Length: 237
View (cartoon, rainbow, N blue to C red):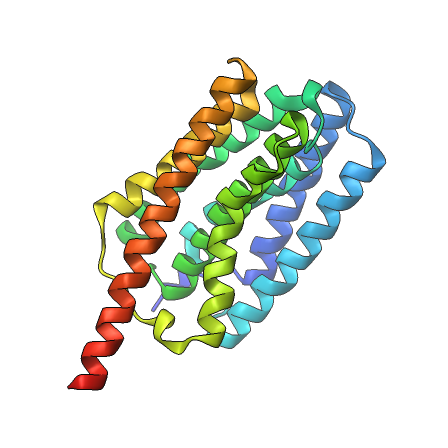
């Protein structure tokens, strides 16, 4: 149970994240001149994300996300702000900055949750979802500025897996922790950030993303085979 001193209500945590988002969007408007369409899309994504967080918290029966949850929401606000820059080659530096900071915070919320004794399944789920959103934002941006739509597969594979699990119950099994899976996941973020930064020739950037995609397909394949064998073993047993 979260101590009372750490129990900031979910509504207050979301309001703080919204304030951070507003501040970052205002800064981006002043520095890189984001347009109304970009801001509108970012706000829409923020509203949808906020509704989903509230529903998830209600479903889990929790009144607060804890201190780590506040960090996760702050990270989410940065990712959502980056949405306003998607597809704008001239704003790539700002987008990369936001996503790099968001990735750095990804290494903070977990330790905070453990140190404060506030780790939860909901917190872990939010962490994963914002990671997925970050990859989606980067993938869409890279696909648009390079004209390579296949890059979207890096972000969409995870959503395809989740969708398949709704149809195939055996895909919902619990996977063992694999260090290789963590390394492959990290590679996706690194490859997309490098590609979004535009510091290398486009061909080199896309080759790096292609390598990351192949590694991701392999990692998902390993997971699917493991889950299939585990389900088959339970059936035989």
